[in-house]
Length: 120
Length: 113
Image (tube, rainbow over all chains, first blue to last red; front, side, top):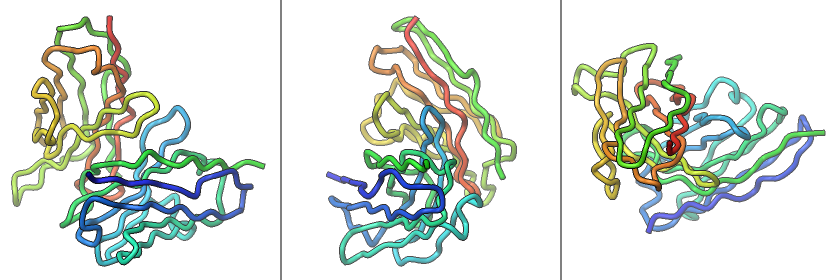
């Protein structure tokens, strides 16, 4: 079955960096757009970024542009999110999710998430 | 950006009764060239990631019970649970994927009365 497993979350100081990883299995990874989404504690859902199966196009929400970089390694069936210049408002559970083959669209399934806490 | 607003914020419904959640987009998510509404619905239970229920506003994802249905077009949409079951207690979100940034409604918390 399709499975997505995130890792790399943790506690980081404001201005610090973190790299999230998402290991995918159960489907042809390179065929699909993939995305990162996040959910601040007790809050709603926010789309963060997506990239296509080939690696382009890429898109980001404005609040992370210039600070976050999404990437993938199709040989390793893995998705990444490099997060730099982290701010307290980036504190959230970060989810990796599969999108579609033709465009990002809806997200299914989602991983269990990894918690990122930005605090001094 | 497309602003997506859900109503109500919370809802309590008796078991076996109908539950209705509304979702309104600030701009139309109907793509005229294919006549499809770029809107999805998700269910999130406590401690779990969201689960896709519907896409194209009314197409049920495989495995989703047929008591879940979606309707609407353009800017106004509805998620209906025809006969509420105990396992349907969750927060429900709608999401537009017509234009980036993809945006979600604030969520509707559904409880048993």
